[in-house]
Image (cartoon, rainbow, N blue to C red; front, side, top):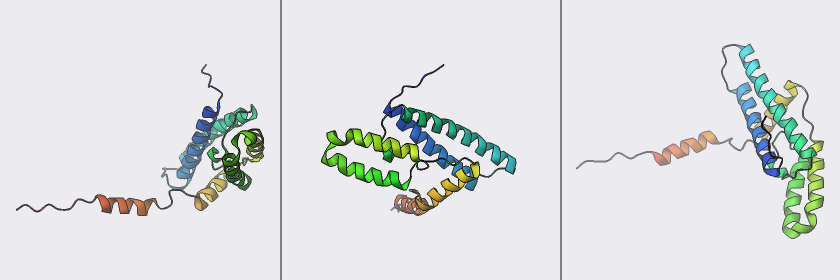
Length: 160
């Protein structure tokens, strides 16, 4: 059986995977086309199961005391307190990095453990939809794509 290294980089990668599965779940629910609703539910259940395994693994690594940056938490793990702590931590680290490391780690772990994961699937989907509707970094992708196509459009060459 394969064992994963237990360090901050592994935890960061797990957080990224959880965020990816959050986005996949939203895509499955909102945009993916399935022949039947049972196939949709099966695909969502499969992705949710994998996400929960990763979330459990991330929580266990955090419980072991592995440090992490609160800005690298998946969106579904973040709360308003975590976002506020991130900006406060960044300012404090710029002023005195060495003095604030131990207090910073303790507050980060407390914020991470305070985040509550919804227990039912419906609550998870509602939370993820609320987060994507309010904070989508790719909300303007269609206008960006149109601008890109316009810039890259080849002009006809006149032959003389």
